[in-house]
Length: 373
Image 1 (tube, rainbow, N blue to C red):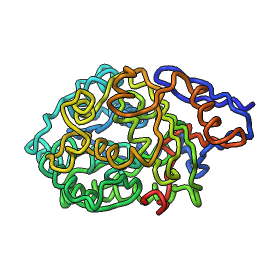
Image 2: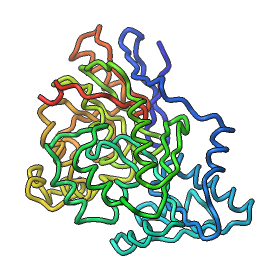
Image 3: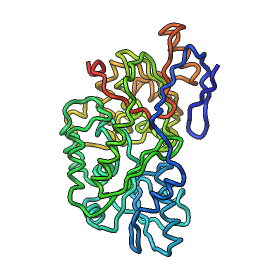
Image 4: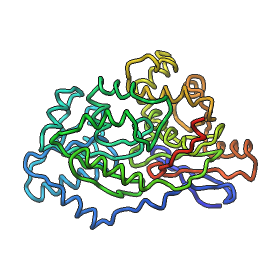
């Protein structure tokens, strides 16, 4: 039997399957940048006294790049300032030790100050996003600083389904926010194994370059599947909350057949995550409330659950209380991945091949029209 491991929080768990029952979803297009080439690209980023570096996530790759910039600045005697959005300041303080990290309030005034300052450089991990199609600096700025425009983006959607790797009206709302600004950004494309590409330029140019690269990395002719076990992004610690791990599910809908069994391997040691998911868990909002609600963080997850709960059979491995997972969210709960695999084979037959995604960073799928039916 092949030795296959999936991340589960602070540990790894083994998947014990016969070769004939395993279909590993891999993306050979993701190459890791050579250490020397990566070093040269980072050194080419323009920094000087007064440059303000603002990481917008606490992923391993973002922290690595910011740490490298700090080291370069120290070697040249350059004084950098490091800023943070409130959501990730604690994580950054832990990972970027001995750094005085300035926290910016989530309001429009602070955003305007940041994006109109030519000394500002945002750092983001560019990725697939089930609501905006792609994630990166413009998307995070919209989510964190512009409540009214985020509500505008939510209302601009063309339907209530996930659209990973597809640019639509919500993306256009986000990019307008960054038109004609002075700040720059670094967009990082990375996997669980390391950094694949970095793009440094004006915010929109960096984001567009990252999108083009992600589009080129899409898996060609990916088949639709009847079962899928989804691991987590170690790089972004996507297993920490239920809302972040649900994104991995929504990003995979393009390859799922109707009534497919999907198992999310996600520890969720930091709880439900987004406010809308938490409110739904505690009965403060209902599934249908997204239709007439002002946008609340994570409301798209509630919308996707409402639209897709009858289409797929979703299960999870999680440390969250079973009551909420089963009774509130309607998820099947497995105690270990072997139990999940056995249930899938029992349902689909002993000769069935279970598709497994070890690294969701690399799982970029083109749309199958059948999943929209």
